[in-house]
Image: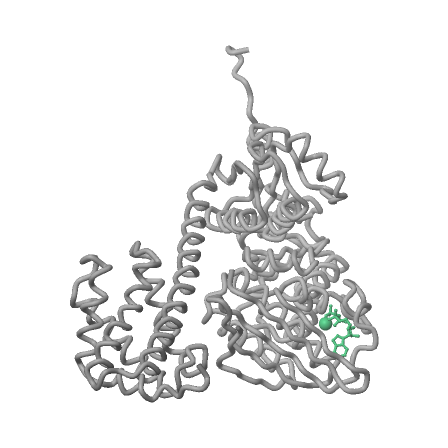
Length: 279
Length: 144
Length: 136
Ligand SMILES: Nc1ncnc2c1ncn2[C@@H]1O[C@H](COP(=O)(O)OP(=O)(O)OP(=O)(O)O)[C@@H](O)[C@H]1O
Ligand SMILES: [Mg+2]
């Protein structure tokens, strides 16, 4: 497209309210009333203004002149992805501009082929940009949701005055472990607890990275003035830790969450005794 | 260059770091503390870093130096209030501050100092009656 | 495609300058909404590198800019000096190795705290260390 300076397309874009009106009309069809005409009109009109300005710098949508336009389309995609629009619905709203431009070309003198082709390629390129940013926006929405889910599925719970625990369940990846550990350490501060328990009874296996994260969390807790115990290490995991040569050193480990709690309570000065009658 | 104030609190010294630490400030603090421990006969030093948003290797080394230096002068050092993000970063950096005792907050740090001071008995000139007994187990498991 | 915006340069001639570099990096990291832990890691790395520029390089500059790539944002910080240079980079990057009286954790530690790390150095001409941290 480098050869075309896009003068004709630009002229069409600027040919007045008719383009905008036709665009909105054409865009409304695939959206089937999921957006009010008012909102769609405002969106198209804002986008048109951005495109008019960008097209002063030619028709290459990857050029610097289009940075603002690409940003606008990315923002639009993000917004529509959140509101549950499909990628084709979003892109067709952009493609609808074609119809408006063709009609405008037709009107002012039959519309020569070059102009129509130029306009068509240009809108296609914009549609592609929209598609790409939509895909990215959706990924972002999904990862945000995954993070929210993570928050819900790995609660840090208070077991006793000064003792908090996080029971981990399922496969741990490095990102998840990191988030959970940060949350655990923050809970120590928020609740003024000197003991943390990471229970991995529900974790089938760990890799080096996850084992390292667990280890780093224990050391970080120590730097903050708290003690962190790891409980429920399965035989396979113990095997991994030994095979990988990870130094667990002087870290306190307990076979079960119950043992770990007892240990933590003892070190805060609480003695647990069975009442004479129940012996 | 700003100087970090050192306050006397019973037989302990309290350093509450509220400024962005410049290297020279760090060095000056180290000197000030050595002098004050000797001058006041303090048995403990509490460094409150709850307002500190980064600890790099230079600042980390200061904690280790102060701990070592105060031990020579027969005083305990406890670093209190390290933020989680700071602790995570220090560990990643490879600095685990061996030999530095830590506590969650000033109150718990004071408890550790009192327990330590009680174990060693008072300095000859000291009045022992402001010492508060601590719970069994001492709550001093952290750090070490 | 990576684009860069808002380039800012600060001199590194004194300990106070090192503090200013930390503050600038912190502000820029907050702007692109790096997580608190990632902000702390980046600022700590910047502190180590700025101190190296001052102590080993004599003096120099820090340049900070915001990057955008594939919908992610990042912060790039470049520390440049015209000091003696580093004769053996691998050795300098070994945790615990120092030519002076440091802990030898600055350079190796900074590398672990960031996502991208590069050293460009020549004996007698100077050293440039570039680091980048991306939003997750
Ligand atoms: N900008 C630089 N110019 C010249 N030499 C450098 C530079 N940065 C680092 N070095 C060399 O690399 C070595 C390792 O650097 P590093 O920051 O890891 O340790 P350090 O500065 O000696 O101690 P510290 O742990 O206090 O930072 C330094 O001792 C120095 O010899
Ligand atoms: Mg250094």
